[in-house]
Image (cartoon, rainbow, N blue to C red; front, side):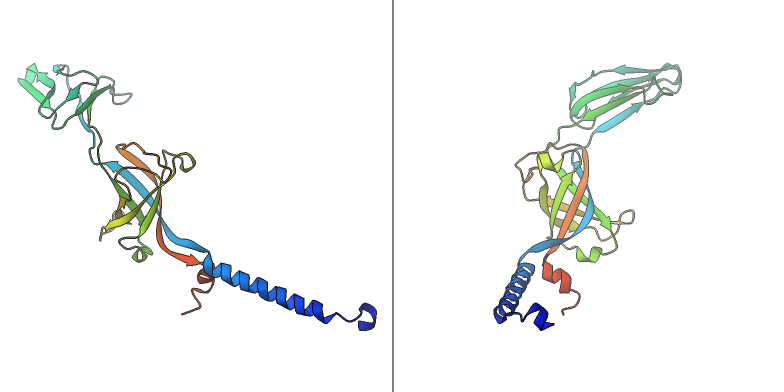
Length: 228
């Protein structure tokens, strides 16, 4: 066979082994240098601490009368009268007041069968918020206080607005509806993303989160279950 193809020069063999060794060293170096975060996915609920209040005005008989003392978008303070409920047949005359400050919004017609009823909303200004995480009970023991969290909000696409970052500061010991609930404090006082965008505080927003457990190298991921 050697007479047909000739003898392979020693320098080619030496260089081949050397190149293979160098490539292996580079591969090992990269696998021990580049890391990827090991994370757990969670649902996110961002809620304003100041939630709207509402009053349902429902007519049970023709003798009822609702006399409004406010109009759409009026600003009210605690104790202001929203409307007076009168029913002469039952000698009823009561004033309904608001326990909170906010702007008034009046919606007529609850649904197709209740077109004469009203819902009066008192919507406060939002100044503060809280962030809740919900994730499965299975594997939740890996999640502890102080772990970093990356949050994306469904209302605001990540490509345009970026994401929020924070840390877990509270974990409820009892599952809520089969899921663990924890709370996050952001790295900034406001809803400011990594792109510098400040998101408005709404009464309720949902999104997704990644809870960062630890950064593992490629080698760690491959040999983590083998090496002690």
